[in-house]
Image (tube, helix red, strand yellow):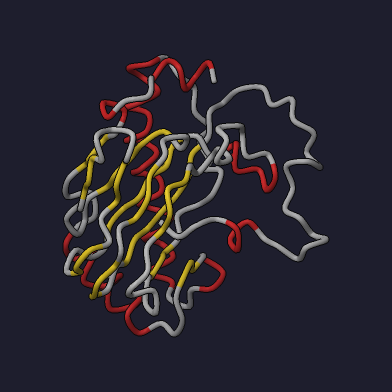
Length: 212
C-alpha cells in the first residue's frame, strides 16, 4: 500500500501510450489471433509462431520501460524487471454480448489484497490493444466519474492494478489485446502457500483472472 499511496487513487494514475505497437506488427499479430481456434488467454507455450513469441518478449520489455518512466521514476517506486504475469494474447471471440463486471486485478471486492492465487502481487496493469474495430468493449473506471476509454489499435494502457474497472458490453467485432502485469520490488511477507493457486480446486490463475 505504501507504493500505491505514492501514486494515489485518481485518473491521473492512468497512462495512455499511443502507437506503442508498430502497425507492421499489428498486421502479424491480429491475423494470427484471428486464425487461432478458441478464445481467452494465449500464453507463449500455447503459441506456435516464433515471430509472435518474439514480439511478446519485445513488447513486454518495451512495456517495462513505460512502467519505469511513468511510475518508477516519478514516484520513486522500485519495480521488478520480470513481470508477475508475462505478456500474452487475449481474444474475446465468443464473448460478444458479454461484459466484465467491476473488479480490481489485485484486490478482492472488499478492497483487501487478493492473496489467493497471488493476484495481490499484480501492481501495475499494462494492456496493449491489437484491434479497435469493435462496438462496445470499452474499459471503464467507475470511480473516476465513469471514465471510459477505447484505445486505438497499437496503443498501451497502464494503471495501478488496484484501480477498479470493468469492460462494457461487447456488442460486435474482434477485441484482441496483449495484457501483462508488473510488480513492485518490495519485501513480501505473505506465506507462499496462501498465495498459490488453489490446486485442490484445480484452478490456475489463468482460469481465475478476468480477460482484459
